[in-house]
Structure formats: C-alpha cells, structure tokens
Length: 317
Image (cartoon, rainbow, N blue to C red; front, side, top):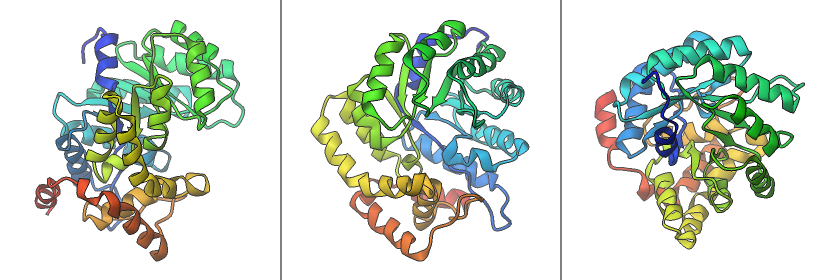
C-alpha cells in the first residue's frame, strides 16, 4: 500500500459489489483457514474485486482479537494484488485504531469501521469516534458503517471535513427516504454504499448509492454482479426481475431482526459443499425446516452458481 492515498482511484475501485466473506469452522469449532482462503479465492475467481474480511457476515463480534487478525491475514494471502481489501475494525477507539494499523501493514487498502456498540452514542461522539480511528491510518481509505438514523448528513459532512481519508460510508439505515435526505444534506464527494445488500441496492441506487455490500455473494458471486451490471446499465426492470428471484433468500436473512442472517448464508453454502453450516453464538444453525426453506429459496437462481465450484472442491479436498 502506498503511503499516499489516492482517493479518486480508491473510490473507483470501491464502486462495485463489496463482498463480506464468511468465516468457516472445522469440526473442532476453530477457524478453518485453508477453507477461508479458498472461499476468498472463489469470490475473486467469480468476478468479485472487493472483499471486506471481518464484516458482520464474517461474524466479527464472535471472533477473538487474534482470530480477527488471522482471518484478515488469511484472506489477504489468498487474494491477488488486484483485489481491494477493506478490513473491518471496531470496538473501542484504541482497539479499532490498532487493528486499522494492522490492516494497513497486512496490505489492506481501506477499513470499514463498525458502528459502535455502546448504547449511549451521540451523533457528535460518532463523528469523534470515526475521526480518531481515521487519523490513525491516514494512508488508508475509511468507510464508516452507519445504521443509526440519528446520524444526519450534516454529521457525515463534518466527519469528512475532519478526516479527508473518509472516502465514503456503508449506509445501513433501512429507509430510502432518510437515505436520500441524508445524502443530499451531506453534499458531494463521498461514495455511498448500500449496506443492506441486494434488498436495498436498487432503491438506494436511484438516490445515489454506487456500490452495495453482499453476503449472498458467498453463495453465488454471479448474482450480485448481475444485479450491479443491470443497475449500471439503467436496466431497472432487469434488476427488479433478479431481485424478485433472490427476495425469499434475503427475507429469510432479515427475519427476526436478522437473527439468522449468517446462518442462512452458511446453510446455503453447506448445501453446495462449500463449508460447514456451523455459526458461533449468539447466532445459531438453522433447524431442518428452515434449512429446507433455504433449499427452496435458492432454487430460482441456482443456475447462477458458477461452475468454478468443482475446481474449489478439488482445491480443498
């Protein structure tokens, strides 16, 4: 990573599907790093160019500090130099800043700062929190993860002014009207990423988002990439048709305040022979009935699962 941040180039690289890799476990419950590397390589082979190790689909809060760093190292080692890595960091300012520096030294191009889990968060405190972490790694691009509607466009603009390496943000408030209003209030110059994945990608695209995150990419990288291509081409009917095919799967992930978000993804991957279905508490593996529902939800777009899976299975055999 260059010591000088080229903001324009980084924004261009990030204006795409940003996949959040899962973390696979072995029978002993420990991270299966060989498989984690293979899964990251599969995403890249499937056409994904940006990965966020240690995102929520990667069970960020269920990993130890050492495990989070090990996951980042594994993913970085498995990907070609052309892959843009956005490392997830969070918790207290000291921990997040230390992990951000580790990400820089490991070859990441940017960090995604998880929204603070402290129950007492003021908008001004959110600005200070993200600015402090951003200042610890001026060489990296910074993408705050925002899911609190109390943070307005004015607060986002204030953060960008205080920390020039904040190049955009992962916006995960489930309200397209609020998104549009806050984006307008924040002004130009930031990349807005639809952080609620495919479900909100089209709606937020219309209001100015030019990237979206994806956990579904772990199952079939072709699906979000096809959705992105439709949006970029202005083929909104085509995008809507694809969204209708994946809607049952994404709605399963969103039920009960996203209780089974990662479990649904891992169950689909397990059924494809990609990894084990286990997740760590407080997540929980799906029941048989729910697993059968996953099978049915994937069926309408199963043909979009790439043929590279056979090569993957040979790699991890």
